Image 1: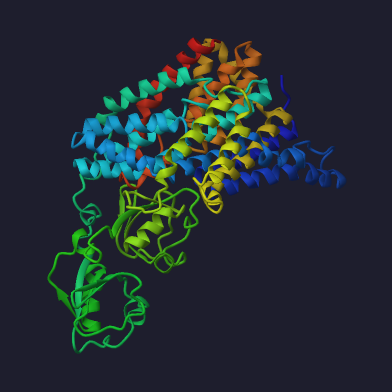
Image 2 (image 1 turned 90 degrees about the vertical axis):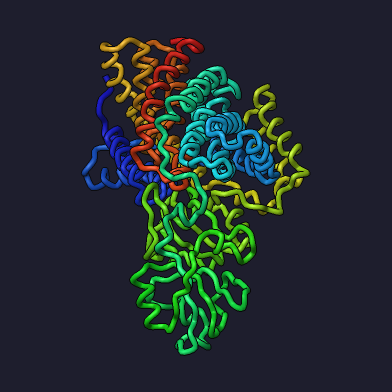
Amino acid sequence: MVALTPGIVVVFALILVALVMFATEPVPVDVTAISVMVALMLVEPVSGLFVEVGVLGAPIPMVTPEEGLSGFANAATLTVLAMFILSEGVQRTGIVQKLGAFISRYTADSEGRQLGATVGVVGPISGFINNTAAVAILLPMVTDLAERGGTSPSKLLLPLSYASMFGGMLTLVGTSTNILASELSARLLGRPFGMFEFTQLGIVVSVVGTLYLLTLGRYLTPERIKPRVDLTEEFEMADYLTEVMVREDSPLVGMRVQEALVETDFDVDLLQLIRHNQVFLEPLGPKEIQVGDVFALRTDRDTLVELLDAEGLDLVPVRVDEAELETAERGQNLVEVVVAPGSSLVGESLVTARFRQRYDATVLALRRGGELVRNRLDNVQLRVGDTLLVQASADSIEQLDRNRNFIVAQEVERHDFRESKILVAVGIVAAVVALAALDFVPIVVSALAGAVAMVATGCLRPTEIYDAVQWDVVFLLAGVIPLGIAMERTGAAALIAEGVVASSTLLPLVGVLALFYVVTALLTNVISNNASVVLMIPVAVEAATTLGANAFSFVLAVTFAASTAFMTPVGYQTNLFVYGPGGYKFTDYIRVGGPLQLVFVAVTTLGIVFFFGL
């Protein structure tokens, strides 16, 4: 029996704090992970101080500085970093956009075909480029697919997220969780995952998941957003958009727009200026106001009445809709923009982030799940997954599309795709996979070589590789890896495993395997999938060893469960990507994802027993 030592108590305390921080996110998850790493390295020296003053009898052994920092040099961390670069190289060629155009011709206005195409495309792609990157790339294509076919985007976006998750289980490189789990398996069992180690099981899971999404899942997925005709209608902006004209007696005549209408206490956003049949977009601030100028505004009715009375303005009787707001360039001036994970805008407001000044763009409304915010926008703190209705010039929208802080939820006509590099980029990814699959070199070596090749062949510019990496994921991995080491070192993993083994008297061995899947899946729906793997794999290995079971099967159960968090929007990054654009409620994830999670408990557990044994 494992004794409860001070080291175990400290590790459990840190895990509890980390779980609360991961679930509530008072700070980003990568900051929490690094904080845990630092705390682990401080335990031994700080406990030594308590020994000197007589509070403790001996220092509490934990992790050494070398072990604490080992996450930064870990093969999993470096492989994930390289895979982000490879995914970006493929994205820059525009191949996905070409694929989207081809699919839209096939699917037309059939919702069933659109759903089949969405699931059928994202699954295989997620097996070979990081699945979060796959969803970020495909999200604009899918929303456009829905728009062209008169389908609610809500019916397609949740299946897009779910399919990317089980598609990521087709190969080792489909998700960062697989890569991290492989490293843990190598350290604990001496058996890393091969490139196609669990592909046969991944195919079974993907087929079952696809059938679910096309049948029962299709019925359960709600239509939160009506088929889109007009973005202003989708965001219910009718009472918030209007046009006003400057009268001769207006005190604003001769003043600059910045002073008269931007730097004001009124809750008003200027969208465009119409002067002598010419339409001007941002930047409007330096322009001098003239008699007869017409301004398109976002404001509420009460503020509008005050503004008309105070500033000598007349209401223009015209309906302001998407077409009206896109008259400036006769093209795309209105788009939905999703705040991406790792965005520097998370926790900021539009004012503190200086959104209008930085991006020459105006936010008309914000959607957070099913909640719409259309006034007093300036001081709303932004969160990951928030969807902003943005009006800007075509150039500004293209800049937003290239910015890693955002995912533009409609396809943007870009002129910088390197289409001549399509075969090169795809060939590099294929070579990375082949070299690792043949065991010619470890995956970390082939992935880093592929990243170098992306730059050497011109698929990526040197300055673009840093923007390609999701640094929050890299730091999260580096921060949580030492926690797994501490669990093993102190005996915390063995103690938890002992409790699980005790319950095995009530369950058959396959039931214990299923239990690990269920516990990991529930944990992953609340905290990071990578943190779940680090916490659960050492416990699974200890429990399997004690029971005399196949420890590798238990590792696989934890790995698959950690990558299939269907029941909450915060359980997996891809769920957050679609939360705002789909207009979903929190309960929609339980409604659609709960049954799928139960199906996967049975399918994955039985599949592991069949392919890998107990």
